[in-house]
Image 1 (cartoon, rainbow, N blue to C red):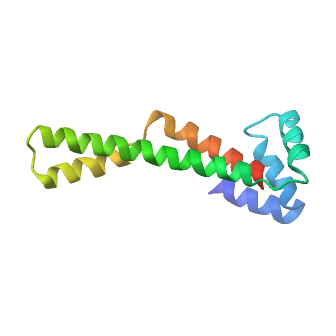
Image 2: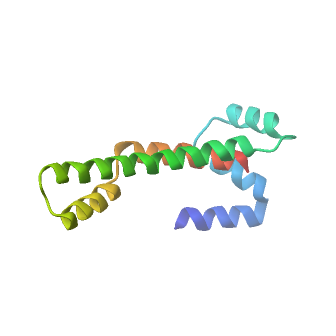
Length: 114
């Protein structure tokens, strides 16, 4: 919550571009950020936004695949339908080791695209 407040205050006091640049510095070096800004200054950043959405969608698909696989396994083990549904919902919500990295990459792309 404190990060959100600081971001909002920075946006109000220094402007949106400065606040975004400050936030991006947590993910990339100043040199990389400046190169990215120069490259996309006159172009739309639709490609970055599309890639960020695909990363987040991919993360969701991984969870769906694992959940469905767990449900199928429970079916092979002869478990009732309600147990299969339950295990699918539980497995879908279990955080995976890659979740944080994928979300971070997607958020960094979203920040860069702004």
